[in-house]
Length: 461
Ligand code: F0G
Image (tube, rainbow, N blue to C red; front, side):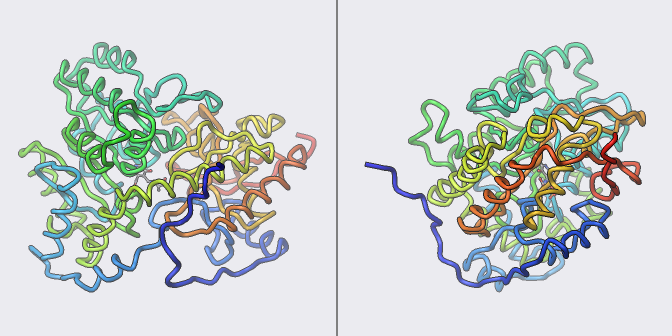
């Protein structure tokens, strides 16, 4: 018997129209944006796979929860609902709400960072790295070797290289390592999960050196689903229990509620250390707000609390992970090399392998992202030399990989939207030799991928 289709465990309740554009219109929009897809007006995009962050569809029950939003400045009932939902899954002593994940990062790294400090992670996300480097500290990526090879197959490609972590702390001294971070799932390394076994190994090293362990837990539910599916002994364990086990191994976490918690905005910092939590709250008041709302409206706190309950539902997660794998399978059938295995929230095209005639410093990922938009109105995101090539000393080097991420917003697009994306990928694959590299004509000092401007290289280059 063939396996049955895993379909969306929901019906559509409200629709948003898409504006169909022509290639000529898209060419004009691209030129105005300096070939930078972050600068495109979203109304000029057909299928927006730029990010899965804050772009998901909320449920009926989340919209209903919003009506319970209480906008009291201090001690709102919505804060209690939020706190209870967070601690149900992540039983840390202190929960500090923030307007999004990077605000939690800014608070914790301004207190723990500074020159001479080093923060290991499996792979730092770009805002995490930027917030660390902004304090003068160093961000070091220590994912296992398989996690740096797009074609390597490994069930937990987001795992930390335990030997390298041990060596780094021994070499730099534990007083220079204020915390170890583990990103679940490892977004920049391909949305790949971390196993509980590996996290226990990280915990043991942290215990030995008395260094705290923090989770960057944006995609905790997808990571827990992969553990449920792939880690021996966990197929009968509820995802919510797996999440609690992940949390029990850490001393704190940063979170963007725009990802797995199924909200459009929000985040938090959570930790067990009383004294550090006090200092975090003091800093939070400066820029985020009073510690019972942290830059969020009461209604946002309600939407997040309800989203957290839905995020660990097995039928939802089975559909979620399958729909991402469906996109990955289709692109591979069209002859496009994609990072193996498919990630939880996104498919990553290996642009360096797909466009070997474009050298890394001519940005093969950006060239492909531009082609996907021009051909089909699909917005994707380069994660490669544009994002990571500029070094703190001003030099430019190729990133470890040149990927193009197609991030799948949660509960937003249907299977036919995804079939369309696969068709556009197949069209580009047929004429991939014609794609040209780019050069940057303007860039800012940090996080250049958001605002840099590009132009195509001439054929003779
Ligand atoms: N950590 C990870 C692993 C992330 O993926 C993100 C955001 C953040 C932290 C920061 O959270 O956006 O709420 O401030 N990632 C988005 C993305 C932007 O497209 O992958 P934020």
